[in-house]
Amino acid sequence: MELTTFWFLVIAFLWTGYFVLEGFDFGVGALLPVLGRGEAERKQMLQTIGPVWDGNEVWLITAVGAMFAAFPAWYAGLLSGFYLPLVMVLAGLIVRGVALEWRGKVTARERALCDAGIVAGSVLTAFLWGAIFGHLLYGTAVATMLGGALSLTLAIVHGAVFVALKTSGPLRARARRAALAAAAVALPVAVVALPAIPSSGAGGAGWTARPLLWLAALAAMAALASAVALVWRRREGWAFTATAASIVLATAALFGTLWRAPLPGLTVAEAASAPYTLSMLTWIGLVALPFVLAYQAWTYWVFRRRVAA
Image (tube, rainbow, N blue to C red):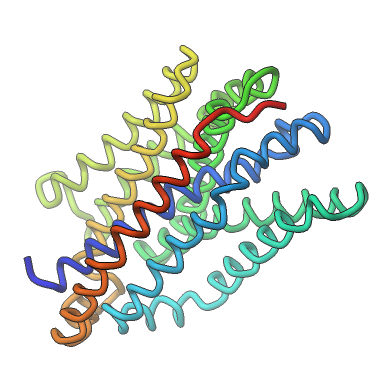
């Protein structure tokens, strides 16, 4: 495998990890006032992501850093072309992060402002990521809104299932109901948005042109539908696996489509760094990445138990 292909796959992997892990963070934040009936339940919800949310953001930092090093033209074009929405993403992440850190150190009145910051930062950021990539594929307002709706609704379903998986008592039951209600919105959006990913491009692309990407998009819809059935049967662990698989497959279809041209008029080969730079990055990545993955796996293992009220 040539290094250009290898590093594109690494960047796709990092973005996928970010969307899966931050996806349930965003969903929990968006659902905070919906599921949390009182301070005790809201604290219980936030404790489910408390040990991991800042570590999940490292995936974004690593993904953007890898783009800067391995594909500087892609990095520069993406950040300059989407300057305003990316600044809004940064603002949303800052507001959410500050609110999460301050919430346990302020008065009840100020805590309400922190809750509003958590909700606003989660909803805004989850919507904007889908909107950015939707606009990148099609360049239209409809695609922008549809992409944002897909990423936001998927995050809410993913987050609701995560709360059901990680809590007990009334909050767990309420989270299951919220997951089913959110899925009633997410599924129709996914039926429209996911097949549009592999069909993007000049004149569209049919099944025979990109069969694997179409399979990924269809499998993402099937995984989301199966998550609904699993939530209904109270199998939260498998339901969370299904929602995560839906995000993984949707992201695979997205980056598989971008492989041909990560930006309009720019091929992957044109965007890549020099071979020597990619070679040095490969050695650094082979040494550092296993430690990062092992540390995060250990973190989730330590905090694997349900959070009691």
